[in-house]
Length: 303
Image (tube, rainbow, N blue to C red; front, side, top):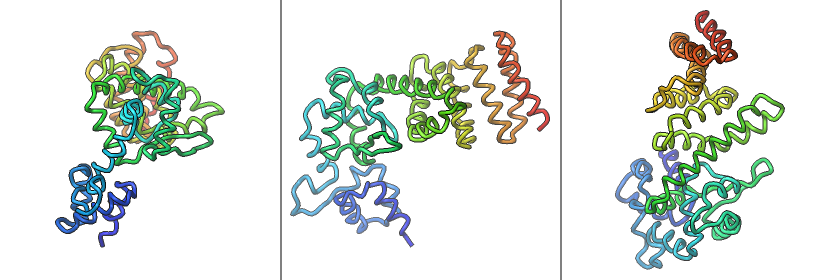
């Protein structure tokens, strides 16, 4: 009856034997379902291993602390910075986002290889390219290390800049002969794109960057049928403080919101966004955009 909760525990603990053993010991004081709900605080919950075990094997944190203490300074710095990625990363992304003080760009490859050798980072081949990720437990630990530094804001700026550039590079390719390649690349970067979108809330000039990002990624949401998610992030970008300037960026994103509404059969809501977008397009003289908005407005009226 509790098989799904047990499977969830094993999945969230990445199958790490010690972590599962520590979790099993907690079943004496709480149900499997309760334990599963508390794993967001796994380093506090998973304690109390065998008294006869080595100290590093008595708690999950002690085990990872022991592995972390064996790293040199540059490896520790890179490991913490890699926690900025969501859902994995490429070598190119790591070189752009994580290089800086104490870690030179040309050293990222060797340091990353060392972390893979020590089983702290996982390397996988996808579509002929190597992609890296951390086990969920390791990433939570690395996030704690990153939060203890003053680097997080700078890393989020570089992370946002990298994935905004990727989305804007992908945008024209999503309607060309390389559409399939770009869709596959954005599939594996979806969590990073969403993390970049969220980071706009805390960045200088984040409103404009957020509008640029949701405009660039619009075709991806539509092509993958992720209309609800696409509409949600689009409206969030429009509602962000500072995003109310009547310029091309807002005009295009209001148009995108209208398109999502039409595609989802929400014609009244779509019409409101399009009717706000059209005067801006006329003010700035964007004739092609005026035509696109007008035709979509007709679709909304017909609907």
